[in-house]
Image 1 (cartoon, rainbow, N blue to C red):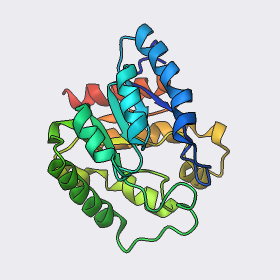
Image 2: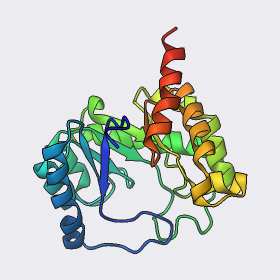
Image 3: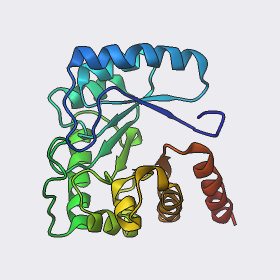
Amino acid sequence: MVAEGAAIIDVGGESTRPGAAAVSIEEELRRVVPVIKALTAELSVPVSIDTSKPEVMRAAIEAGAGFINDVYALRAPGALQAAAMLGVPVCLMHMQGEPRTMQQNPSYGDVMNEVSVFFAARVQDCLDAGLSRAQLLIDPGFGFGKTVKHNLQLLNGLDVFQKLGLPVLVGLSRKSFLGAVLGSPVEARLHAGLVAATVAVLKGVVLVRTHDVAPTVEALKLCAALASL
């Protein structure tokens, strides 16, 4: 992945797919800590830890990770305090509900407004806990408690989040809403994922999380060339 152009490697030990079962702290640590140690010894790019548990955050950073990616946006007990103490960049993701139930009946009056309000409040909570704005990124959470329409509305309106003044990260590749639009299985969503990533970057997104590194890097290099004109 690094050879193909990945700028960050994201490591997680607990699935957050819809309906996924919870994993204990001990099991998550067993899964991620040795991997992070091995990767940071070999790679020149930063490694991030995808977790919501403060205990895992601390162990992962001690093992060499330099970035926290939290689908719960530091809402777990003790997570805010752990992130403030660790002092590394943190991505706050929006999710309606929790992974086991989030896709059962997601509902919004105005998805763009509600996600924006969530981030404004969450950022303030982070600042109050001692984190700095320079540490924070936001991720609107495509596929996390959203219908196909909600995801499309978020993609179309991503530039709205620029008013928060924070870097925006998105994870779009192979998402189920792309499959719903295309009528295609997960292995046949590459082209739609590249289009979605391109749209996101043209709307101001600065980090794209992807399974398909090389083709995504090519698409984003073209976006960068256009932006440099």
